[in-house]
Image (tube, rainbow, N blue to C red; front, top):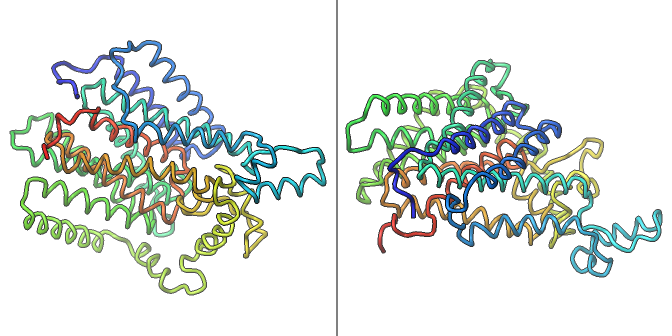
Length: 453
């Protein structure tokens, strides 16, 4: 059960939130922390933060245990990726991954005497990604803990993400020109759009929630609403000027869901339908008015290119990735090992390096196989359904609106992942873990704040 907010959060909570925010800010402003040197600094910091937290936090102040559907998926996924690094006897390896066993035996002619090997075809990359998953788990746990120790003030915990994303949006707006898309400190405009689309629903819903409150707003609340409206506007413009097609569609979808649920939260069914129609009309009108010709032309390229639907080889990569998936169906080729395993299955431009599928779902399926992918999918669906449950069942307006914003952000990344790899960008994956941790704080094992059946 959530604690009553009779007094302010302890000062240590602000210190931990500031530390986590600085790590995240460094990751964002260093191109999303895609370089190993930049990410390693974040990794070391994220490794130290929970050690300090546990050392100086009493057991009585720790959050209640996670529900099993949120606790076990990340732990089992960590265990499974670790298993991909364990040398297995050839007999066992053949049962789990026949293609990997055949590959190892073919190398045995060059390096005789090999009687065991790992599931991963590139163990060093898998080890690096194992540490990534562990770091994201730390972010997940820490944000949930902070939401608990700040007495459920989740808007306070998400505020650093919104401010950092807002700064990125401003940077991107100054970058934009007819010859240059907005991309902020990121190298890829789609990943820049991914950061903003994860943050946008929170800024938009906070403003809606404050304006729909049935009480007089103080000056401080009016200032916060003004800031949230400004941040939402900057983020939406940043997404549009990034010229990211999937980012644009994902953002419209998340805003539609978040706006419709927020505006129709106290309305009967017919009025909710009208509210949803008005939100859709407003988004379509704003899109036509704000979208530059370059973005419209990029959508035209999809219909105008017959050999390659998206003009960048993605459909070909997706098609060839299925060959990799069918050869490593159960345990995958190893998390992070796609680049090394893919060349054998390529049917086009073999001289060019391909290090990603540009589709999170296909890449996770290829690298984790059916077992690991099922664990990751179960965890993501648990977070999504937890947010949806709180959005429709919570009786506390703050919890309800925060759940709606979370739902919008999750919808955005789920859509964008069909055409990009935002979850392989450390900074963006940190935001997803941040949101997941806050969603996990919506219900600490009590139904006291939920509507009765």
